[in-house]
Amino acid sequence: MRIQNQLLFVALLMFSLSYAAITNASIVRADNQALSNMSWEPGTMKAYVDGAAGNPDITLMACGDAVDDVRNKYATFVYRTGNISGFTVVAKEPSNSYTQLSTCAGACCRGATNYNFNSLYAVYPAHVYAIISTDTVFDESDTLVYVGPSTHLRGYYTQSALESSYNQATGNVTFNIGANDVQSWTGSAYATNSEDHPYFYIGVCDPTANLYYWGCQGGRAGVSRGTAYSVHTGVVSPPDTAKYTKYWVVNGIGTAFCIGADPSVTAVSLNPSTQYSGGTVNVTVSIRNDGNVDITQTFNVTVNVSGVGDVQNLTVSGLSAYTTTTQSFNLTLTNYPSGTRTVGARIATASIADCDSTNNYASATLTVEPAYNVHMYINGVENNTFPDAGRPYNISVKVNDTDGNTPDVLVRVYEVNGINLFAPIQVLSTAPARGLSPISYGQSITSGGMTNFTIIPTGNKLYTPEYAYTNIGAYVGNYSLYIEVFNATTGEELQQTNGTALIDQFNITLLNMSVRTPESNEHPIAVDNQDDYVQLMTEFMNDVFANVARWWLQ
Image (cartoon, rainbow, N blue to C red; front, side):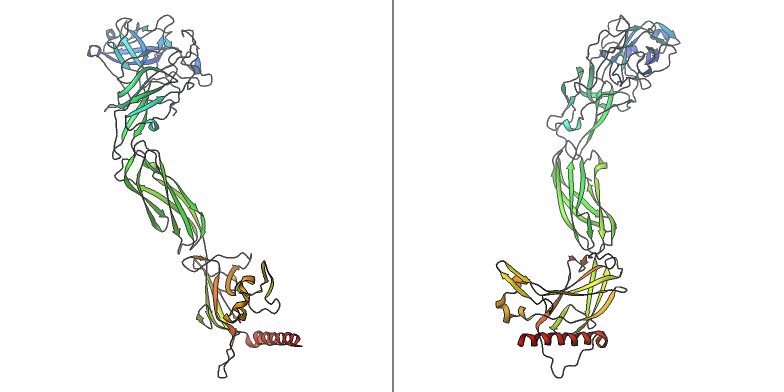
């Protein structure tokens, strides 16, 4: 976790009523007493030293109700965290770790012009304290005054996230300031040495009611980097109905973290993410407790499809801290128009104290493609069953897509393993089973979604019980009639639906595989294009079959 140039809204913190006349302390420029922030030079890893990153000469200034409240007092800058006892001096003159407030203007006095932050210790972003004493021996009985918020030490350091280190049973978190997080450099004539030995004052704290200073329930003073420190938060075995905002504070700079549950939807995945209307999509929702407190109660995750509404309610029966569960279901796209839709999952957390409500929703994009409905009419009646083989039937085929459009498409009617003079069914070998399978089809392009024509299903006597001994289906497959539709321009096959599910083809049934001899009183059927094409072709077909039959009989 990185902090950069972070300010706290803090003010005066007094530890003794005997120094109540001192009102504030600050970091000021030595030349004009203007408030100053001391910056850190990340490019060279230099600390808070004159000349680094444009830093001016600085000194400490303290103000009181009257000039005598601060005149000739001794003062220094220290690291401290809230009400944790102890401090570390982080500034000095060339020969002293303090400065004397001897230059005064009105009720404000400042120290030596060559006062500076010690590059051995003051190498971090911080909100420091000034400690003011009547002598050169500084202790907790002297006046500690918070410096800020107008001046502070700028820079950055990294620190591991405390949320994930929270232990529900003990109530502790672990600070782990890495061994190489910050390098201290000697860059000042006032630094005592170049030893790389920074200090931290750490704590787990709450801001006070007026946000003026930290009240810390646990912490450590003067810790160094490269070591893990366990710090008590004051919160033990919390329920999932409560959450607590705490701050981890390092050298006066606090960063909020939450103790509590954090139910979240981490992902919504669709398989497939593009599907035809009427098809099925598998929806998988990943749900995680991103918080550091176990969720013990049951909660719901509602899945919604834009333009449709709620489609599924998922139930999660509790979830331990930092664990993930997934739930899946099939979503059927019945009557879904084509286009893109958002499939979103949202957690309802009315009774769970949620540390972060911004992660309770996730979504994925579903693309719906149109599918095509085929309606077939036999002699004007919607039907998909032919009573007899060898008889002509007028059929009409109507095609519309699931958006209600009637585009012009290519309709192809197939007969597989019927009577085909060009390629009669043949068994080529029995081991392995191989045969010659004839496939015939007729095709037409719709106009306004409709096309009309005549077909004559030939059937096949080899598939009747009388000829079951031939086991012809094992060699060439079964007899079938069906319709497929294609894009009239590109020839791409179009996906069909029966209104409730996707289908590969529109199947047609032939009840009687054997050709039935017409009865004497049977009225002849008038078919489309009878006089122009159908009768001519059937007469020619009769001649061809008769000729073949004579050839076989001779």
